[in-house]
Length: 400
Image 1: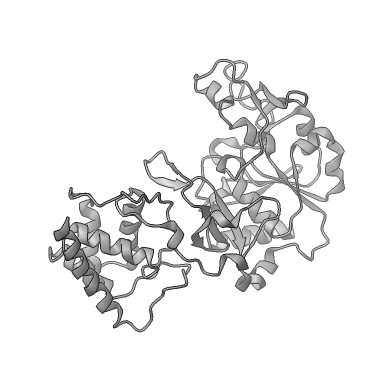
Image 2 (image 1 turned 30 degrees about the vertical axis):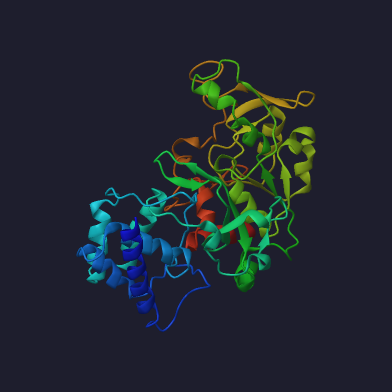
């Protein structure tokens, strides 16, 4: 262990000596694209050629990321413990080392090298300290959606794209691929981009528009709940409790933040069940991933003349709300109560398949239907990007 510490100190001194020769040290601003000082190519070359060990390379890269010298365009969620040390076993796949060698020889682009670094972080081979990573602007200067209760004291920087993006420190989950990912993310406005936001926001727009948050769909995805029934884990989970929402992919929490932070008023879907005439107050209704709705809600929504169904799979299953018990019960749909019943309302405009499972939205289209518009992909992840597609979508929603 002492030998490693001495060698790492030597390597770190080499790192810092090279750092001193650079023109600019990006130690405070995380940019929209990954930034890596050119001199790090020397370090990658040392490792690829066996001049420093794998452990020394990993420890050095970890240091550079945690000190905002290597700036990644998206910071993965990481759980760093005091006892965590780098193993002496070979951890890094050959393709990552090959990338490092080719990058040091200018044979591939920076993004290819960064892909390898991000892979090592996601696999916890490199451990970063999310609390040390700095954002584009001070946290106290950004603006979050007033529709969500957000405690800035627990937030850490994740990315700077169209919006500033933050996660909750240590709030990671393991994805289906075995990677650590953020459980939920919070969007914020960058005060330096207000002119751009104004082009797609409705702060000063007199239009009567409302965004409907799928409160009941959030509850349907809770555990134990409907999906435990579908998977066979529970025979009586067709009734589940109504619970306070958090930002989840399945209930379009990112999309809801994006629209409300741009000035769109919002109501929870349960208000439509209580008072279906409420939609008559609005000229335009924006539905998110409202998969589970009551018959009253279905009728009120489909009878409105101008609805944007922003997410596929809307109005898919019929439920009933018990306000005394604060529960929802599955009535029809999702192959319930009999196999073969897909859409619980037999809605001929249902666009679940195949659009619900396209979460990339490379070929996103918005098409006309009899009472409004629908999309051909699930746009939740689009709100985390800084693409022309996102700007066009937000502009379309405003101008619709």
